[in-house]
Length: 338
Image 1: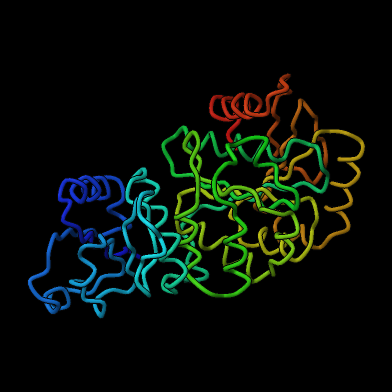
Image 2 (image 1 turned 180 degrees about the vertical axis):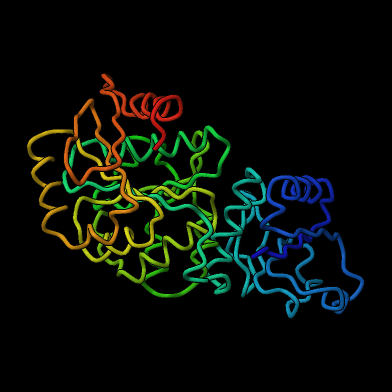
């Protein structure tokens, strides 16, 4: 879905700057127009209707409200937000244009319900899972994401762990994924658009920051997980999903949706025992066996009859998790391809 946006201000230098930037970097998602006056209230409607309008306060009375789905008042720190008219949201005029775009997506997501097409995912989906904690699952997931990003693909990393590892690997200072969980729970708004508005990007990897509270993850149903994965998959070429160690209905749904499943082990007795139990005692393995690649991390050896496809990754000695991921990514690009 492309948002139809009009910038309605007499500050022509400002509107041109914002419009040119959006046209260059966001033309696939926003169709932008500019205007500095309106000869009549009917002129806007006669031309087209708009999803969003960015409006200076001086032109509010010229705006044809019937032609606008969501009007946003352009304001600065010197203005009083209390003076805004009824029905108008607020958007800071003097901030990074990328932040303006993000705010447009985030606010419009809450009034739009278009584009929620469950089952129409476009990305190649890889789920990274292990029945054992501490085996380097997140490092493998992010290394896999980095290796795809290095080839020029659009990559989305989605962390669904009960306790998120994102802060230890990526900049976690953006807006929390909790707002997405809330929208999913309430079934109210356009999840795809909200994700576009709050996602971050580091080293070519797009991602969502960790929840405000670890309990926020518990509100998600299996249906919510399906919708969340679908929404993320529509925004990228490669979707990498970092799963918790539990094997509940939400994990099973994710493994079902995935095109590829990476199961990580580190060769320890605990990991080996739990992995053997999962394969031999859990009928779920039969349904995903053909798309499973076992990742023997930290120089581990995996000699099991069920492990037909195994990629061995080296042990990287570093206290910096980001360095570990980068080294593993280099290995997967130049050595074993996951």
